[in-house]
Amino acid sequence: MKTNYLQVKFPSLPENISLSRVIVASFAARLDFTLNELEEIRVAVSEAVSNCVIHGYPGNREGEIQLELAINSGMLEIVVVDYGCGIVDLALAKTPAYSTDPERMGLGLVFMESFMDEMILESEPGKGTRVVMRKKPERGKNHG
Amino acid sequence: MTIDLTRCGSTLVVKVHGELDLSTSPVFRDKIEAELARDENIRHLVLDLGDVSFIDSSGLGAVLGRFKSISQRGGRLAGVKVPPHLEKLFALSGLLKVMTICPTVEDALNKL
Image (cartoon, rainbow over all chains, first blue to last red; front, side):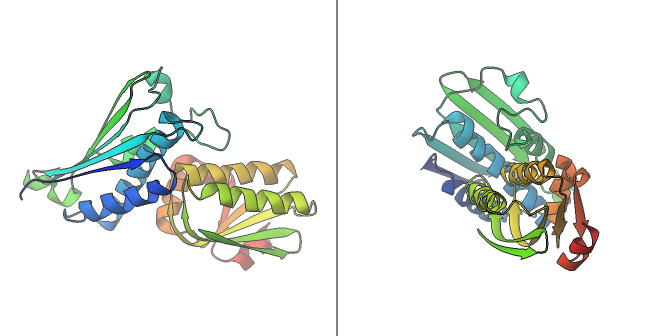
């Protein structure tokens, strides 16, 4: 399968979270993901972009989110980047159920790690955060 | 996302249509909280989730928040017609420990 890629930039607005899910699900549908796997991908993307809106640009701060998608050797790669606050304590942020908001469950990173084959979180305070997630269809894993 | 509120005795039945995420969960929260504030005789909450096409941790947090609100007045929370993809996330998040899952609204009203 040929390499495919897509890059999208959009402002940090809550209404763009559903748009990002639609884009990723449409892009990922080219691979042999099951409906359950596509649902897991939609949740993972939703969490990553929500984190940009909530934590990268808190208080409705203006900012830009970049979504980069690629298919390489039957593997879906999703990169979500913001240029906002960054994360001061990565270990604390990765703690399950850690949240500063009583209306939130602190499960975003847990879902991203659980639903994707690989999740890499890089962040620098004051510069932003970059999340890389990769997933291969379960049905294609025996074929390299 | 739209929600319909119906009162059945001391139970508020909330039918949710659409997606529950960061963009829509404030509407879900505000409509239910406004109804709870308006009527202090509401004791239990039933969420009809049969038409919810998507939920993430923001939506789950909004459900947890309503569990806290209804618990504070001594009531219970039930979810009905919960689609499999939602029930999986409810289980992972621990929400199934605090809410009763029922096949229909009538079942939930009988159990609460």
